[in-house]
Image (cartoon, rainbow, N blue to C red):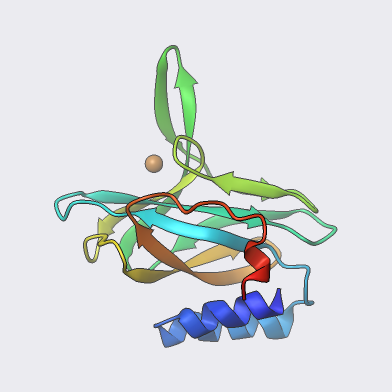
Length: 163
Ligand SMILES: [Cu+2]
C-alpha cells in the first residue's frame, strides 16, 4: 500500500497530486484506504469531445467506503457513469456515487462503470499521463495517475509485487 502510493507519487508530474496524496496519508490509517489500480484511459482522436477512464478500486479496510465523484485538470467536467440495458440497447447513465464494499472491489471497465470526461483540456494521446482525483466519503481525496493507452492493460495477478 505505502510502496504503491510512493510509486504513484514518483510517477506524478503535477505537484498538486503529490500534495493531495501526502495529506491523505497523514490523516488516514495505513492500509485501510481504498486503492485504485490499472488506471487507464483510452486514446482518442483529437476531435473526440469526451473520454473515459477505467480502474479497479480495492478497499482493504473493514468498513465500506463510497466513491462520490472525481475531478481532473484534464477535463472541465468528470462524471461517474455506468451502462444499463434498455431492451436490446446499452445506454450510459450517470450515477451519483458507488459503494466500495469492505474487503471488496469495484471495477470500472469498458461496457460497465466508467469515469466520463467532458470538455477535455487536451486530446487523449497514447503514452501521456494525467492526474485524476477520486473523492471518497471516508478516505477523502485520493489522486492517481491515469495512463493513456490504445489497449486495455493486461491484468497481472502479481501487479502489486512489481514495485
Ligand atoms: Cu459515459
